[in-house]
Image 1 (cartoon, rainbow, N blue to C red):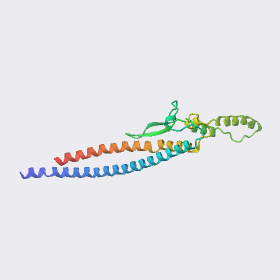
Image 2: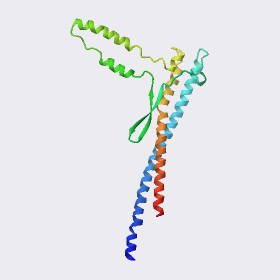
Image 3: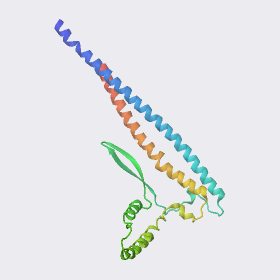
Length: 209
């Protein structure tokens, strides 16, 4: 009888150690969750502030417009194509993040790099100078067309109100900043909620036995 009792003693002790370990893990998960939730709330506040600022600039642009043209969702050109695209990038194993890419002027930076590498060094002879001159002129001609006509701001001509440009830059900053950040934080919060639920379920199972 005594040996049977002694043999059964380590069971609760092991269960207690397992529960204590899971409780520590649960504390860490809750700490991570609260930190992410704090970031989420701050970015939501940032998004709200930027949206208000963008719409104020849009209202100022409408007020300063010298023509009858109005700027707003009711006057968008239906032919418009998105200039920002969201892609899914896998940064770590099992983790995918949303990334915003600009579709205007694709490869422009690579063209600049290529042109900078192709600039000739100072020629050693007059013949080399003559041969180098057309190349430089041709490079200058190729560099000039950097403006992408798909930019929606160009629908309203060259002399658009400065508040309209300000509104565009603010809305672009929203799409490239707070929006993908909130999406990624929401995913992380949801994953932590699932992990917290599993850990609490494991603790309840151990406490039953």
